[in-house]
Structures are given as C-alpha cells and as structure tokens.
Image 1 (tube, rainbow, N blue to C red):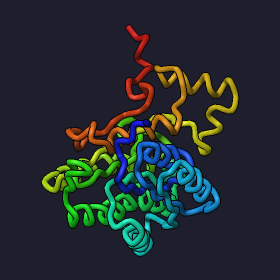
Image 2 (cartoon, rainbow, N blue to C red):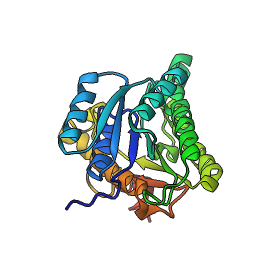
Image 3 (cartoon, rainbow, N blue to C red):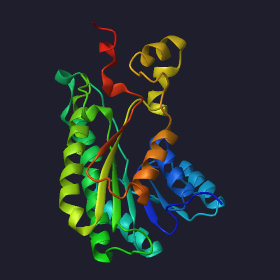
Amino acid sequence: MAYQPLRGQKALVTGANSGIGEGVARALAAAGAAVVVNYLTDPEAAQRIVSEISAGGVDAIAIRADVSREDEVRAMFRELLAAWGTIDILVNNAGLRRDAPFTEMTLEQWNVVLSVNLTGMFLCAREAAREMIRRGVRPDVSPAAGKIICISSVHEKIPWAGHANYAASKGGVRQFMRSLAQELAPHRIRVNSIAPGHIQTLPNRADTETPEALNELLTWIPYGRVGLPKDIGKAAMWLASDDSDYVHGHTLFVDGGMTLYPEFAHRA
C-alpha cells in the first residue's frame, strides 16, 4: 500500500493549475489528501488536474478565485467548506511577476505583484486560520489543528535587481509567515514556508531552451540540475504531514544550493 500520511485531510492549493502549484496539488493528493485546485485562468487545465487526481481515488475539485480579492477568497472558502466541511492544509502558492527596471516600474506593476504575492497570502491564510481555530485539533486526524505553507522564493534572501516588486513581496512573505507562526502556535496551527530556487516551469522556459542558457543558469546552482515542480511538491507534502510536527516558523530552501552564493566557491 502506498504511503499516505495525509489521508482524511482536506487541502487547498492556490494557483494550482500549472507549475509549482500543480506539483504541490499532485503530491498532496498522492499522500491521500483531498485537494482543491484553485485557479484564476485556464479552467481546462484545472479540470484536467482534478480529473487525473480523482482517477487515483482521491477527491478533488477546482475552484476559481482571484486570491487578491477578498470577496472571491471568501466565496472560495464557502464553497470548500460546503463541499468538505473543513480545511486541514493551506498551501499559499499563487504568485506572479511583473518585471521592470526600478526607475521604469509602474505603480500598477508594483501593486499587482504585492496584491497577489502578499495580500493573497493574507486573505487565504486568514480564512483558513479562522476555520482551523473554530474546529480545533482532531487527534484522530493530526496532532496539529492545521498546516499553512507559504510558497516563497530564494529571493526572500537574495536581492534581485530589475525585480524589486517581486523580491519585496517575497521578503514580506518571510516575515508574514514568521509572525503568523508566532501568533497561531497556541492554536496548534503550524506555519512554514518553502523557498524554491529555479524551478522548470513555463515562465522560466527561456532559461533552459538552449544549451548555452542552461549552462549559464547552472553556474548558479551548485547541485547541477534545475528544480522540478515535484521537488517542491515533496517538500510541501512533508511539511503538511505529521513527520514534520515539530517544524514551525521555518523557511525550507529547496534550491539546489542557490543560496550558498556559488560565485564565492572558488575564491581564495
């Protein structure tokens, strides 16, 4: 029998119709959790993922919501709770980039990144925490009342010229997660982050399209390979499981060593 440490639990993954979110949704489902696949665009992709998860004998539903809008987040949680009664796991994954040199960055580019990448985490985590506190611990399900996982980035640590809005949002995620962990610990709600390095997703396709681009990228990754969405999925599954029950307020870097500053490796 497959190892399913999340059987009986209900999960929501935001931005789960592609990339890292899809990898996380599939990993949680493989571990036995029922999964809400949140999406904003491309409903066909979301429904395909739901159908494939369901074919494996695990419940899944797709719910459209813009996580930066309070009314849509509340509606998503109402639909989730009507379907399944509660939530055990939230993976705050939805995020985007609007890159520009700082002196050319528009207020709209700044605001949309902060609204999705940071405010969206606040809105979803608030709704999840309210339900987790209301329900409390169910010892037959988990020693934790709930698990909240924020998908951050190595750029919560590494500055990124030309991406000030994105780096600022991820730096904010770090302190948001830590503050939430401090506040929710008495309710037995565990809060952690995953900080991916370079992951092979559609927006990053140009970085690996040619051997030259790939070789240049790999100079920044000591482990010598590009990350895959399933790498983040495995980390999320562990953080959501009772195997990590004493891990709280922590950022898990899943980056092949990008944060080791590899440019210093050969300096005397």
